[in-house]
Image 1 (cartoon, helix red, strand yellow):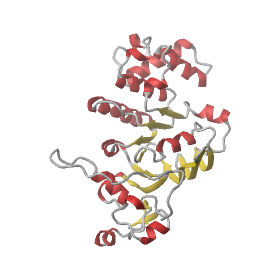
Image 2 (cartoon, helix red, strand yellow; image 1 turned 30 degrees about the vertical axis):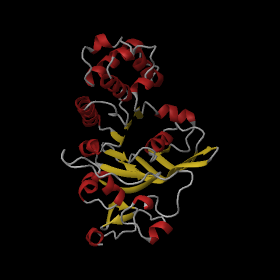
Image 3 (tube, one colour; image 1 turned 90 degrees about the vertical axis):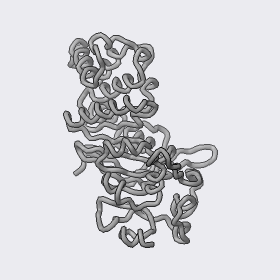
Image 4 (cartoon, helix red, strand yellow; image 1 turned 120 degrees about the horizontal axis):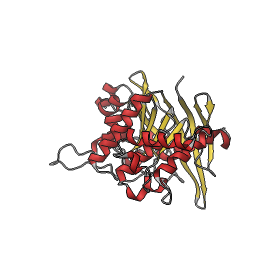
Length: 326
């Protein structure tokens, strides 16, 4: 049994214009000690899916299951979710400055988070733990900087503080939502190294939400490619990069810069409205291989080449040699 098993997750929001179907039938597993990357364009449902799992999309209509270590997070009450968040499920959000309170010192915020889940630990012991964590994630002079405010840290350092806070109680699962966005390449590499080192040390499972395929290549074991709220392809990392099947996955990879002298190959068009999705495959309006069946019937996830670990939601032949020939 996987550490986290999500099945047929559906999330929608009522708006004056109609229901936004943000996540539509998403399923995936996360194994202990492994990294699952969830990739796709902005608005594909990546963040909504993980926030729903942790009970952070109040007011949404939610169905499906998400069993974490035997507990269904979707049907769990708020007291159970508060107990699990932080202690068993750590979270790193995209913008650390908006996640850290500007009026309180870094050390105080980490101490309060630790003591919220363990009231038996003294403030002094929690403070020592906070300093150890800041040292662990590479904050220089952590014993001194523990009393600094968030604005006194750079973007990369604030992200490290968020990682330290998320790892404070050695959670079994870490959800990292665009943890390297807006960071320069050097700082991005440092943050990823911190996450990888902590994973090796504590055996933490990671869900990494990103649109950066370079980060995926460096960090992921398994990959889910999302588009318009659904999984288009799900496979081990090497299959996504070297044996991919879905035209959307191929489009994402083709849009990466290969050599500085080459022009980028963008995916034409734009994603469909999640309020009024067209019939058939949601990618049909942008797909270079579209045919009549694509516009009429939405394809299910089907094993590629007979491998249950590699699935694609596409009507093209699922034998890769036949798909290439067609």
